[in-house]
Length: 319
Image 1: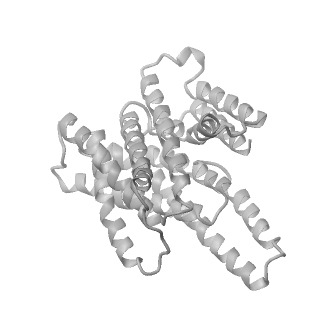
Image 2: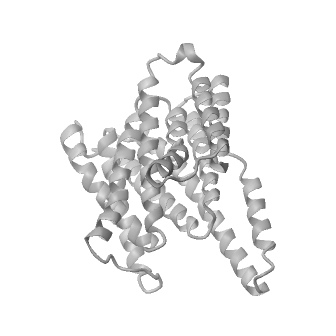
């Protein structure tokens, strides 16, 4: 989910919508229009999430408190939007405890993902943390294989090997794997595992429940999970200056509520493969913003390693 040529993907999307001659022309035009809107939502959502590491780094409170406020404050726009669209959204209500459990589960994974990733952002570079957290698609496939016995192709194995080789290059070669940032990079990879769980659990819900319901339940349950970590284990729970609150509100409103909702909306209209657009976009946005705002340069070896990791992820997704 985050890097490469969006132009190629949009061309594929337009080809697929235009070539569907079995549909009436008016339906084709309507479908093409909906797909274009969804594609725009996916790109904007990916860019919004790409800016989230900057908000985390500039936050006045620690990584756990930042993660808590990210999801807690995001509930405000989500609830307002749900109320405003309740008469126009087709949705089904949870039928029992099992459904409520399924709605809570993504939030548990999301809390673990945010805790690990926010911690990684303070232990390694923004570019490394964002890139390694985007190994999630590989873990999604591995999880599908373990849990649902999904077929794993040779193409996926080749992509996995390529991505792992890219991680070694990213670190500067085998001799550099023991540097001080290895723990931060490993924490970012752990975040990718939890994000894969979030994606897998969301996938089971999206066909039954609306974006509003999924976002509210997952965000609220993530806030409940994050609260004790933020309150008891952070030195500072609340910002003391307006700038600190601005960073938290930007993270909650722009990156979480805005970015995540746009991506979940888009996935209801686009094939799953198009989620790779956000893989192409988010780390690029994060690296550029980190260079401009945090003075974090991207070296040649890091750029090559990042490109190899992204190539491996895209190959794995095709498999």
